[in-house]
Length: 121
Image (cartoon, rainbow, N blue to C red; front, side, top):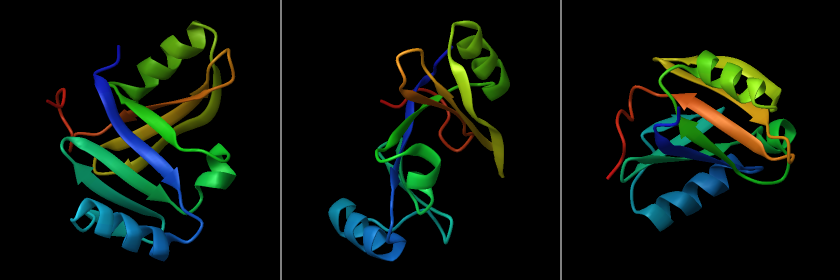
């Protein structure tokens, strides 16, 4: 079901400061830069900053697994005992995400993202 790891989203209380820091650390500007989300492409993976991350996800980052069908992935995960945490969200451009909470309490993200196809090397 999972195509591989795709994205990690860090909560960023101060998006401007976080973006400046990550740009220096990574040595590249973000490929996606909006007030609601900043995304960097890092060797086939996405490192993202979310100014609403703490409210949505708690204190820590959330990892997203690549899937070809986000609804089917959520249905499978819920069928295996997870609880839906955040319904499927369509961000446009074919990017759709959802979050479930595993039986042990961890958040598990799934993402359809045609901009990161296949398994990264």
